[in-house]
Image (spheres, rainbow, N blue to C red):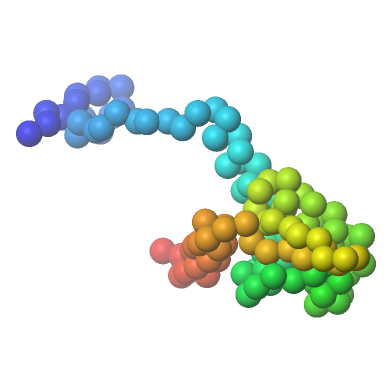
Length: 119
């Protein structure tokens, strides 16, 4: 059984022994922070939600959002750079989708957490 660690500087007395913290690499932390930053804008988050319903072309997203193509394209470019969305070209149209199920779970989890009743 692990022995408590006494830390008089804390003021709480003994702390339970904990497993060592296995920090991800600095590169992984920077990538994760960039993803959260990209998703951290309400307009970009709304695009991610629309893409959670399935692949959409830029013009379809612009119409749904009531924004200019250039505005939507800029938002999607940022989301693509952060690896949250993927794109494919079909003739003159560019279609976007969530990059993978991790992004879908991230968006759902953050919105579920945001809509919970605060304690």
